[in-house]
Image (spheres, rainbow, N blue to C red):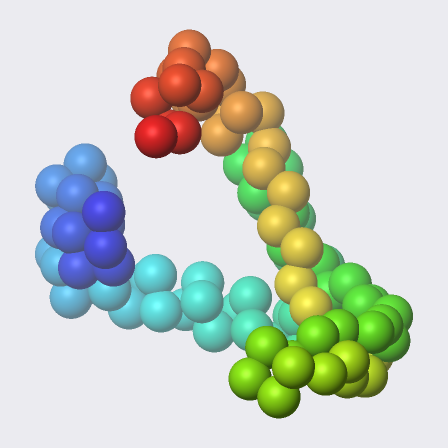
Amino acid sequence: MNKQEAIKAIANKTGFTQVDTQKTLQALEDLAVEVLARGERLQLTGFLTLKPVPRAARKGFDPIKGEAMDIPPTVGVAAKSGEKLKKAVEDLKYEDFVK
């Protein structure tokens, strides 16, 4: 499901217009960006937690040049699923996703 399909589905479930739904989803995206940019976590209890995580400097390999390279330290985003998401996929079979 892509963003536009999600907007349509949410609008159908809530009775909101697609325009209002799109504004709400955009506000949630904007809030997540603002919170993470401040170095804080966003926790939607039972659903999802997003938080910035430091990634240490490490050695890597450049396949084009065929040589080792230094990868500088960075900050990434970690996403942890809550109980609702975990429960949604608990009956799926691993074999259906690995081919």
